Image 1 (spheres, rainbow, N blue to C red):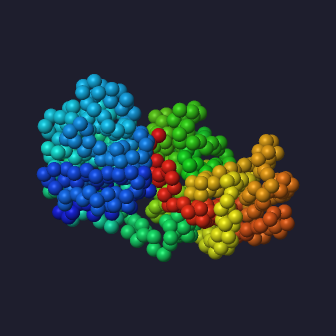
Image 2 (cartoon, rainbow, N blue to C red):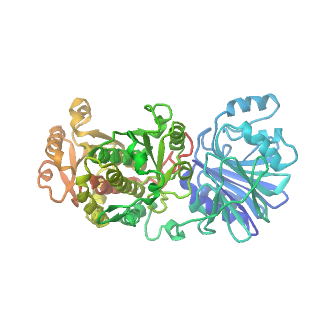
Image 3 (cartoon, one colour):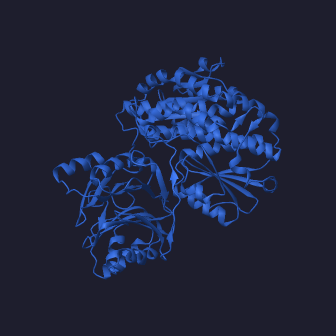
Length: 611
């Protein structure tokens, strides 16, 4: 979940590394550091805090100019955030300097053995065993030493390594963790995530398991640890550098909320027509014969993607005649039902690098399941491991809290469900025409929702300023939406927000409803509207302050709530997209009115590459 950058070329490394780290700090921002070589010696500077704090340190403790180096921005896993635990890290002699993303699972045993051999440790990190192991196994040949140490490490890792004896080289390694080489003109870059480098290059190569990349000022060599030289196929990033700019917005989160019409449009582009949907990405793998043998569908995801998956399951339950389950990625590897070749498993991941999801994917593949990846990131690990991939095309998402990726995932799950219904002759196939028409106008409905709710939500956010607790209730699709809304409020506003199935309140949680407590009641599903209104009356009887979110054609909710917010009416399956927007805006404005950094919430990171 940390971020690594590297540079080797003819320009000064420091400003390039700092610039790239700032673009990468959504992966971690509790400490940061640089290691830079002037081709004679390596200097290290690191500090607790964000990249701004590192820049301030460099004003007090400047570094010599150098044309190669590595940088790191950390999300702490082992050891608290501090300058001591910040990367890059050295060993006893700083002969080797390492920046690491991931977890070394067997570090306690390795550390114990190294201490017995006389090594002294100064940090609480798992990473520190790596430079000590390199010192202990140093053969005098940088590349050979690295290849000797790698088999000793268990876990997932991306490593950028420098050597005092070879100050003109950087070695990069990846094992189940994203690490990408960027190719410029007479210069080479390293990064944990492509957006960090888009101002410098758009030509990339993701380092794969079992590969080692040797970077020198003259060239980049990709090898296996057995010494076989490889010829990497470059990929070209589709993103535009402007996509990574704030433009006229105060925060990336707000920018990305307002980019949702475009995200929906791009996700549906070339996939929707008058007669149905097109997903040519699936046809080579999911043949008619294979689909006829599918006996169960599993949807696996984490966080916001899990909520997208819950919506997808409910839609599939309506339109398909195949049982569907949804599971947390973190549970699936160890607690899953019987799996076989008759199972289709759909993995959702915004980044395509979520460690829990990749672990679950490997487990599904081990049992012979057919695997579909739904992700926003072309070339990510999940796209290489899955049998087939569908891209959401939402564009880069720089804020830690996911917004447009969520709506794009649900949109794509609708398309996938319609495609599966057509291929398998599901019971709900006859009901697809209404859903297709609603999908065709979804972009316009999202735009209308943004216009209708922005100012009203900004005002309501003032009400949450001094509130410690907030509740969201709803039934069916609205309950899932309440879960996502609560997560957003927790992430960026730090409000203790809880979501409940409205019909279950009377079975215990009504005890938490006290006079004046804010309750957001979601009432967008016509078939359960009467029951939802009854539940609203129950909390109003306990003097809660209730804000209702309902559709413009509803005439009932306003009479039973304190405030009402209207959104456009669309197909019930798509209401979780439209109704999510006021909840996203509420989280954003509640966070800003409380003075929080909504783009970089405390204790969180964007790409969760550790289990």
